[in-house]
Amino acid sequence: MLNGLRVVEFEGIGPGPFCGMLLADLGADVIVIHRPTANAVPGMGGDSLLDRGKRSITLDLKTADDKATALALIATADALIEGNRPGVMERLGLGPEDCQAVNRALVYGRMTGWGQTGPLAPVAGHDLNYIGRSGALWYAAAPGAAPLTPPTLVGDIGGGAMYLAVGLLSGVLNARATGKGSVVDAAIVDGSAHMMALLMSLRAGGAVVTDRGQSLLDGPHWSRSYPCACGSWIVVQALEPKFYHLFLQGLGLEQDAAMIAGHYDRTAWPELTRRVAAIFASQPRSHWESVFAGSDACVAPVLSPDEAAQDAHIAARGIWMREGPLQPAPAPRFDGQRRTPGPIPARGAHSAELRAELAKKAGSGQVS
Image (cartoon, helix red, strand yellow):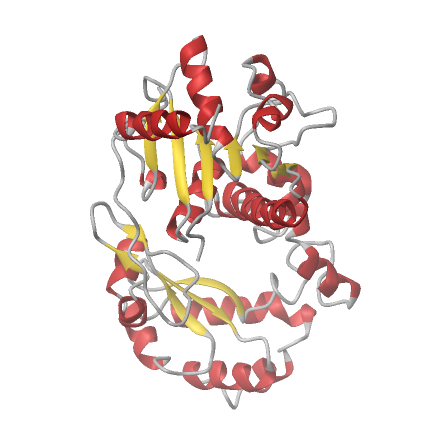
């Protein structure tokens, strides 16, 4: 879908590279400028799954020749991704003004946690810091428990990479209509707060309240995870009455007056939660998967990625892949087609190829 779109990505960690991977999965030509040496953080150096489908060139941006090569690549690009603190790219001579001087239509994507402006703009932070301050972490636990989300999903990816991707593509559409590029200020603190719009809508209607454990989505016995006898977990979210009836039926409680009356009764939820917990804890997860198989009771197992890859539905759709490391298949799908992502390149694998392309274009007068 993005064939013909070229993106230059400066090596980073987390949301910037994820955004580049997403665009590459969709067919864009993503060229990642890697540093000559890998990141020193354990487990975050070397070849990265987030580089799949990209082309890699190694450049030392502190040298004049390699900076000139970077600018030559940028002159051929539709969009750029960088994830440094504000001011870093300007000091390298590769800020928005520098890059748009060689490419007026360039969409310059800036991926940060705190944004380009504000008191915290120059301060370090990570996923949990941004979503903690934005409000997005608030509902991520039962009352009295420590708020915690699946690592990276709400902040780095949801509030960061996805908003950067939308921003870049919006900017490219505008540039193609006007001939003028733009600068995308994609901040995780902004995006994670924006993702709360649905919750805020529910709060305006009274379904969600500020106090944790008192809302329809985080307090009831029918909207939470439960441990099973085997130590694995099952999750339920039977919001509507017809689904709640099927949930009670699966537990053998369809005639229980307290359970029936307590569907939306906040005062009854703690006691009903204890009762449901005891029932789920009496059998292994496999038993409950069998009981609720194919049911509209809105009950599902909590699976690890490796278990998910073996799940009948997940496997039928090919959602997880084992080409190389276990990895998710590209999403979304178009016309029902399943796409295979490109390989993970070694650092600098395309350096000679890309330099040759630039030399050819310079020889033909396509780039200065």
